[in-house]
Length: 153
Image (cartoon, rainbow, N blue to C red; front, side):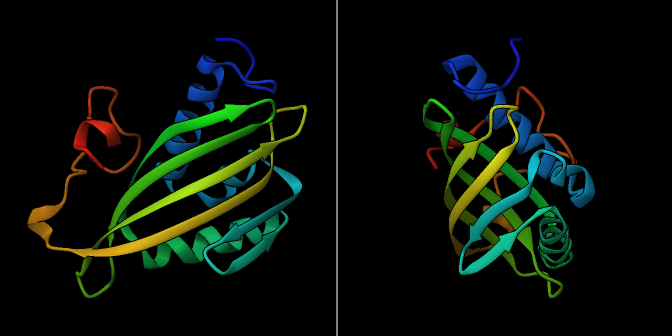
């Protein structure tokens, strides 16, 4: 696979999205933060995050609240140094209430392929345990597991 730096091609953009999905599914804030620039800028829902240290703090809080987190991302569009992604993830709170969170992200990368800007819009849908669709063991989604389009999500 070619180096995953801009300008992106269909293959490198799709690989970049899968790499991001894999990282977030491992739920290691320190490791995930390494793919962002030192001064990365995020808007996640209504929260503004700036820099890797704030990314680590944000993800630590997120995954302490969103238990048994499983994420699927899908490439929506790309051009030059930007990628648009749609995603869904399932999780439960500490009371056992399940949710499927749907969203879109816009990403912008520097010349080295690190994410400089991330803008995320997310909505949470309460679901019953029996309505869950993401059932792989915690960690990386298996290659043969259906994606968002396969589920009609």
